[in-house]
Image (cartoon, rainbow, N blue to C red; front, side, top):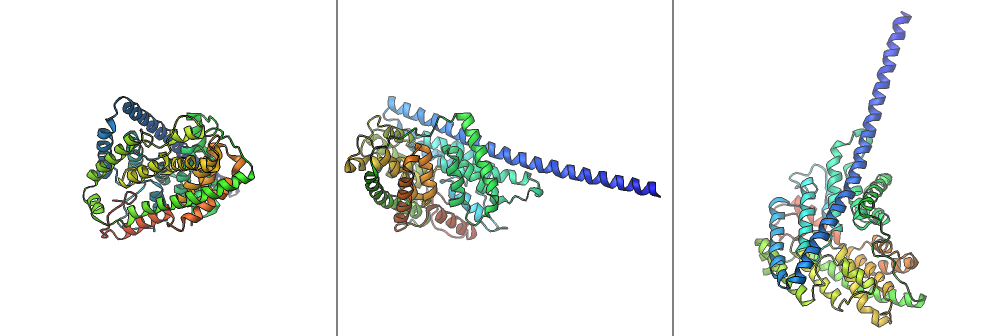
Amino acid sequence: MTELLSHSLSRLRSALQRRHAAAYIKLWIGRLVFWGGAVGVGMLAVLFAELSETLTHLFVSGVAHFGWLPLVVTPLGGAACVWLTRRYFTGAEGSGIPQALAEIHRPEHTQGWRPLLSIRIIIGKILIGASALGCGFSLGREGPTVQVGASLMNAIHGLLPRSLSIQRNHLLVAGGAAGIAAAFNVPLAGILFAIEEMSRGVKARLSGLIITAIVLAGVTAQAMMGSGGSFFGNVLIIGGDGDQIKAVALSALVCGISGGLFARIMILGATSWRGRLADFRRRHPVLFAAGCGLLVAALGMASSGVIYGSGLTQTHALLEAEGNIPWYFGPAKFVATLIAYLAGLPGGIFSPALSIGAGLGHNLAPLLDQTAAPGMLLALCMAGFLAAVTQAPITSFVIVMEMVNGYSIVIALMSVSLLSSGISRLFSAPLYATLANAMLAKQATPELTAPPGPDEKR
């Protein structure tokens, strides 16, 4: 009897040990899947960046040899990109951040919900987004990388064991924030973007999950592209406290007003644009995109090509006081970005917003007698305009601080971002939250017939 009892206890102990080992293995498999997803976000961000830069370089080189090229490539390319998006990659249009937010905050068990995050959308976002840049449109890849990162994390959610207790929404926040971190190579800004913009209503207890994803994505991007210091190098800062106060005040006023109007136009174009032109866009989106491409081509030819692409090359030239960037770069980039956005192409506004801000700083430099070394003023306007457009001041000033190695002017960057964001609220509601809410409302009431905007699900 004792022998039988001992044998039974031994078998029970062995069974418990096997079950414990199996649970432990499942736990580590889940962690490896999650870490692999974060690394994958970094790799996709690098692929998107390399493809975008290659196609943009080919376009610019072609324009240098054939000045008439934009009149053909930009309208035809824009029409083709919109047709492909609507035909095969519905949900990939627009900047990508509102789509990720809508998926994070959508009610559970929503009937008839058309997915805004998927592997199909990853393919469309990267290929068509890079192609739109390669056709000369003024767009960015950072917002789209948020949707790409969230889509990849959404895809791996079903592969994670339940024992990890990771909710889908938390994965989407981690993936989107990792996308920003990898796209700009700014890990701290990625963390703050998750907190300030994406994680409203998401429990803070999983901040470690978010930080892990951001770090892995950032390390992957650095390993593949090289760290190379800060994105724009070191900005030369000249001037005392009095100069900084004047620069902050002027930058906040100009960037707050212009950024608020920029965001307001984007919201109106995506949610409540009415009239004959809006009806034409709704009925003939491909022809409308071709018309937008023709306008961008004409504006590019009139501005000697400075408005083509993301604008990061021109921004770098302004910060380094190299080249001969004309005074109209900022205003022309402002108009070109709005046209590209209204066309309904997959593409974001982060890089163009930074470029517009740099252009505004370039115009303000003579007023403050900083034409010899305008680096500080340019950095302030970059942060100010981005903060005014996104109304995410903390993320904006940290992005610029990390990109220009501007730790010596961190207080000034913080001040101009907060002031610009506050002024922007007088003209516009928060951009991404408003667009995300419009998508949620439209998916809940598909019978609405309002003309869809570029950031709305068609």
